[in-house]
Image (cartoon, rainbow, N blue to C red):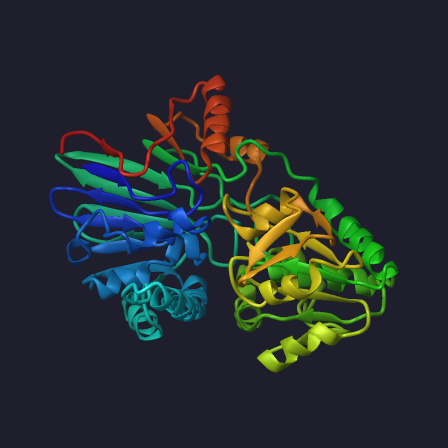
Length: 462
């Protein structure tokens, strides 16, 4: 069988692996590239495979860098089955439709520029209709159950502890009388975080594909997140400013709400408004409420309603978001997107970055080339929305809110294999991060390889 790395190789985003056997063609994930303009252009390139020839897509979770090109895949001829958990299906329904809206809006903006330059207009990557149409191909699977897909393919989904419904995929492929087990980590979560369960430990694989988003970094202890959240809130409110939190709609937002609930119930939190200014995050939070079965014991037992508390305001309408520009009191605004590449957070940054009273607090990964990365790395001025804006607000970060394991946790998870895999492919990380994790694993006796995008690896006889 041949395996092609179509994305997430020496880069965090664009997760997609194409497996071709004599009888079957499979994808694991079909994610969107995110980051710089150069990186985003990859989304418009033709697939490295023929979509109509793909029989099955095994999806690890709903984040756009893993699921975001599914509507394009379907629009280009895919008509097979997409297997994933029930929670992931519900999250994909809102995520992909939201992504389509962003594609349309950005294309309209781009076409105005192209018209001024005498260039032909572009079509959006996909439409809302494409996103809705893709949902008919999804089929739900349960954790820990072995599924016989056909006479050569079996699959089992295990809880990855990353976001609601996220999975590690155990893929069993039989070819030429040989059976090989491929394990795809998806995104591995941290241990001992609220809401989701800890990642499942896997004990065997012939070939392992492990993420390396934080392969060279160490998070603060999870126990510090509330302490830091309170600290940065109090600092900002003393200045009379706004605390802006760019946040991913899924998991990060819900963990923030969980922490704010903790702080408010403890009586130590300032009595000011917290605005959840993201229609997508509001929809995602409703899905979280639906799937309590996936919560860890603490979340199940501690709170009946972990995402509802005094002073929390859900901003559904654009008009309510605009009103926050003139909100005269200290407040917290949680808005997407998490990397500041789109969404309402960009409008809030436009109105707030220049004011030293305000604080921008990053709680998630900022991809290379993204606006969030530039701000986090200390840019004095940023270009956005046709303007150059001076950065005078305080810039803070809390790493322990990350939904990704750091390098000690990734090593801990990889060492759970009772026998070392034949090869460990280190993926889903920028080159520096992937190489660092690879080096650490090699020191522990693992045979590691950091692939390139487009690289083909042959397993057994093809």
